[in-house]
Amino acid sequence: MSPLSFGFAKSIINAGVQDLAVQYGRYFVFEYQFTNGSDLDTRTGFIYPAIGTTSSDIYEGWDRAGNAFLYWGGDNTGNGFESCYIDKDQVLAAYPGITYIEIDLRCFWYGSYGSNGVVIKTNAYTGGSMVPSGFQWTNPTATYSFPAVYSVSKNITDTNKFGNGSRAARVRLDFSNFTLTYYQD
Amino acid sequence: MENIKLILDGESVGSVSINDEGNIEDIFIHKTAPEGTFEKISENDPLGKKVNSEGYYIITTQS
Image 1 (cartoon, each protein chain N blue to C red):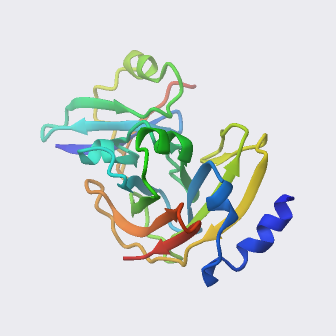
Image 2: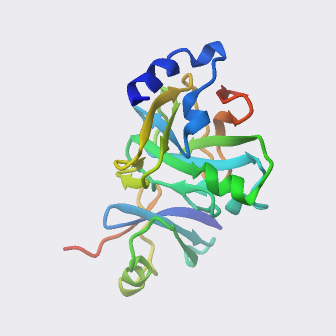
Image 3: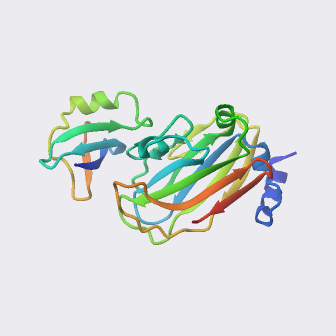
């Protein structure tokens, strides 16, 4: 099946159709997109399975150590993207039997507030190796690349540099039903 | 105590913890920082008040 056919299926994901990216994807990249404002700091962590015990090792991002299951693309002090990916196989090997993964996607403004809000974009890949590209991740050797799934924009007003940010979204990858769902609460 | 973003040669590499007297108590380097970052910072004496008006701790090693 060609990547284009995966993309066609993607367009009806919100109708509850099985998502081929969730079914076949191994690497899931969560990109925070911010088109104005400056220096959005991201905090990405696992809700399920619960990984980490302190705010430093639960979350990955500026001033956070993260854990072995989160791969951050670095700190963007301008605007554009910050991103973090997970390796589904690595998580399932460490937490056998889980049927879904839920990721917390939080952020705050270290620089200036951006009124356009923050959109989360999830890309998925099968095979190959993940490669950093600016503050994003790509996989030029992937067997399949799955087109992005976008969240709705969330207005982030949090400017507290010492907390864990406000939630832009949480995303659930359900491996029983093969669905990807964003939640804003 | 305040955590300030640490910028080395234009790149965010971590944070510095600054106490109420303005002195550095700790330096945290991100996993994503280039190799040799800590050495570069040490060699360029971060012990000074270099926090700019936007709240960034700036170290420049390149002329």
